[in-house]
Image (cartoon, rainbow, N blue to C red):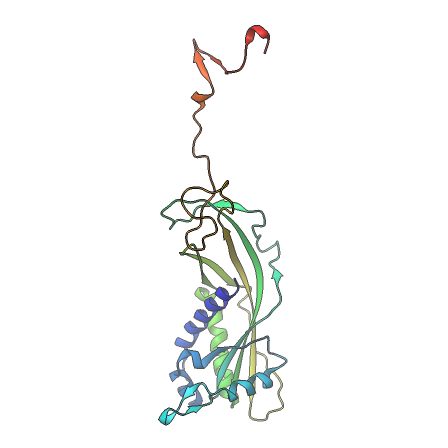
Length: 260
C-alpha cells in the first residue's frame, strides 16, 4: 500500500524536474535527460551511505550510448529514499479510521456498500542531490526548496484502486521549511546536499463481504475485481408491524384483556 505513495511522490518530483532551470553547464545536460535517468529511487534511507549508493549508481549501465553500447549515468543526479519504519500520524494532526465504517464509492455503478479503514502515517523521505561541482548541487537544491515552498506543492494526490475503481487520497508535507545541509564525504570532487521531508499520508484499506451470508447479490465473494458488497437494509415499512384503527394503534402480539 506504500508503493502507491512512492509512485505519487515520483510524479511530484517529475513536476519539479519539468520546471528546473539550468544555471550551470552540467545542468544543461541534466535538464535534457529523461526523468527516469535524472531522479531515481534508492533502495534504503541513505544519508549515512551516500558514497556507497553513489558508487552503485555510477556502476549501473542503464543508458544507451553511441552504437548501442551502454554507458553509466552522469552527475548530477537526485536519489530519493524512503524510510522503512512505520510511524502513525500524531492525534493533534489527524486521526485514522481504526474501526471499520461503511462506504459507497461514487464510481460504483452497482451501488455496493464496502467497509473502509484508513492508515494515517508519517513517512520520511530524503531527496539527495549529487553533483561533481558545488554550484550545480546548490542550484538544484535551492530550486527544489523553492518548489517545496510553493503553496500548490504543499500536497499531492496519490492514486489508489479498489475493484477497478480509482481513488485519490492526499499526501501533505509536514512543513515547507526544509533545508539542504551538506553531507560529508571523503571524495574531493563530490557535493551531496540532502533534503529531508516528512509526508502526512492517508492510506485507504477497503474490503468487501467475506462470506455469502453477509454478501449482497451485486458481486462475487473473494473476487479482486468484482467483490461483493455487504447486505444493507434499505427501508422498513412500519405498516407491516403496526395496525391503526380509530386513531389508536395496536401492536400485533399484544392483548389488552390479558394486561399485556
